[in-house]
Length: 255
Image 1 (tube, rainbow, N blue to C red):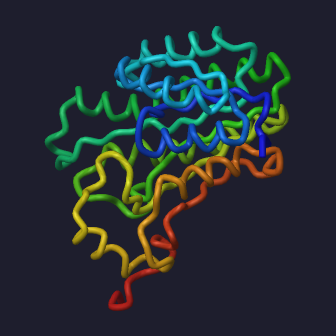
Image 2: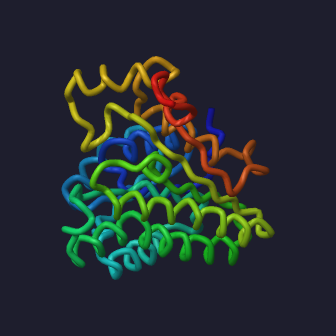
């Protein structure tokens, strides 16, 4: 439908999983893309695969576990295009371990990827949008673990909780510039990297999902798309659960 024609979107973690599908959905609506991921080969491959969609597609490899790489990614992305309209902070990772076993190195890695890099990229995007009077869109990604903790993921869940608070703060500050900032919270998504391929796992979760199924990367991508469309210009500072109702209630036998 080309509702995003003329827009340029930077999607982090867009070489696979949810980020890859988000990039495809935005391109289908007319957006040009900046693809980014940790591995140069993966970035080049996705750029080649998405270019036939008829959009301009650029690629920048960056390891967002390193603060200097987040700054470099932002600088290079902004220098590539006349203006950046959309930033999707999708990149994320976790290392499962009891919190008392987490090293400083692994704490830094998880916080940098899941929270700090999003903050840095949003800073650059917001400055550029404000300077060019772009009524832009920033979409962050959290996790249901920020609301119902995962086992052995204290750093990941708390970093994503910070992303939700950051979303509200940024929305408040950027609202006068016409820039919206929102957050999506993927629930049980069966086709993202790191998700178990075990049928038994998803069969065990499905009874607790009111929608009657586990989700797909496309479900999350469509929520991201909504926040990027002109029709959502009055929606900002919001956190949207894309979980089929998984976090809406308690199991029947809970008392």
